[in-house]
Image (cartoon, rainbow, N blue to C red; front, side, top):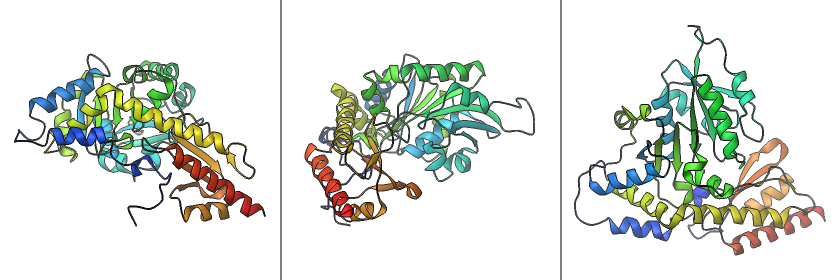
Length: 347
């Protein structure tokens, strides 16, 4: 595939690295330092990330989102315990069984509402506690934002934390797009994670180069985490280059600027296409994702020039993702192409 092809809407993983992030990597690319994060700079950035979420939080850098989520579950669960999550959760749909294979935990899924859990749905999966024949629920996991681009309000997250903690469960937040959620809600990172015990703080989808963080807000979970990270093959030897990226992400709220722009581009795309005949926007557009239903022939025609994914093939639903580097020109050009393809199909 050419690196100079059409700018598509397949994924925020397709985007470039933010120049401020590249500059931060270059700044630490001098001299020698201790490996594996045993240098003052990395430790200071870890503390900076942690303090963004709470006084008792601790942060650990990892390579990718799957690794960060598996590490979070390994810290929270034993191998006879389970994780309550929505059927549409990334943990369940797009981790290739990693939670089961690597963390050894069973996913206890429930149908979500717009991709979200509710307290009632969580309680429907809590039962037969103490029976030795049954996987014991230990964690409630939510995606913020969800795989459908929807949001948990701060109040909704708090309600889920309350029901989890009332049953002696922990709350995990898959935050691959946590910045998009916080930007859309207009809150801080600390506020968007209030009540959560452990989360993944995504960077790769928001302008970083293969860098994620696990943030443990429950201090008890941090006790043996260094060993879990090494055993899970997520310990970077040249850790300063991951730290530098998060240093940049937190500087002048780069995370909010990047995510807010991606969200705004999705709103622009949705607005441009919402009333176009032959197209239906199928999900609430709350962050940087637009879901729409198109005739299959139109989808195939568009995909010849613009990369994007078919989300639900039987109903013709597609997903368009916007990124920190999506431009207004990208959006307007693509919206025009969609309208033209629909007009051509109707002729």
